[in-house]
Image 1: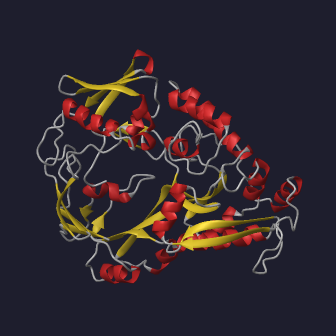
Image 2: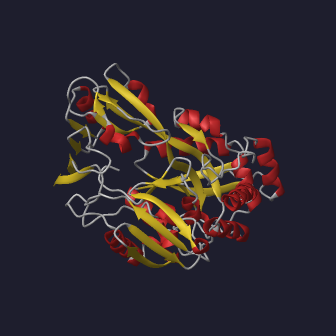
Image 3: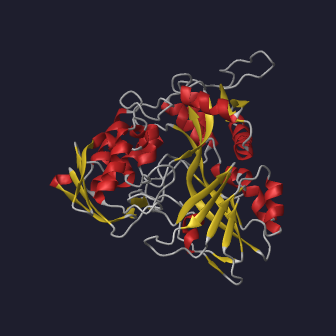
Length: 455
């Protein structure tokens, strides 16, 4: 956010807006995108950003196989070339709605040499120093220097903040916010584009749509958000970002209805005692499964325990397997789990749910869960290739309804984060965005502070 930028950026409502690009226009029925690059943009090493340089950087992005999973439109690009100094032309094999968003990929020359308001000048261990880039095309940043410094313990972070050695702490656990408010500190909360999800491995734990609907009905998301997230979150019942411009708010989400959940379990043949008692003395249950969790994430632990309690009320026995973060990530990637509690990015656009929940058989991407639904695949393809907003709205609404009928997971809550900043700084806030993204526009509110230190 401080050093690197893309041609575009995505707003909190999922709409793409210009960044390094000044504007763009579609041609030839959506098969050609002409991008007009801003004039007088420079990289930190002094290299002017021309259309030819942008084309060269994008060619490198396209050539990396791993980017095809993260940036779906890469597979649609057939040619990238410059026309004149500031016009970039991208040709496609098919219309690609996701191309504009994928152009938010950071443009850089070498390691961290970008066009952003700050340039990396020093790396010492895990500490990074950035100096303001005086030739930044949007204007010279107010703060001269930013030091990024990690801390191993929250207590050390707070003491450094209160002593004035640290100006901002960038990731505050929900349970800690109320304890750090004082006259010298401002707390800024914002919605994250991540949600907490109980996901299943469809290869190892085959649950019918009826059972998955029942599990979703058994969850009291309001109570879960209040107890586990201390109110810093919003209930979620599906994989689509609810603030997206195409989201259909007339579609009614899952409600908390344990009686309906029990009826669906019974109809699916999961009566009490269906899952017989096992070695170790566990009583019979309707369904028993093991959920993988990372052992060092307190928020996921609290969420998991509250979810376990709620599911137990309807006869579902969810047991936990806590492993190190490295093992957790390795097993998640390899599909070695029955169920997993994850904090996954799902917004602010439709690209994220597209890469996680479209057909695993048709698309070798990031769908490690194995969810398959032919109609969802058709609607995702419509979203990807649509050339009108009306078509995107229609497909999005159909996806919302489909994910209620055949839910790919149990979606729990969209999370929030808090940033703490000393009141010596006047923070510029943009609705729905991380305040750190505007740090270059912060100004000293009283004393002439020239360096910002971030935890």
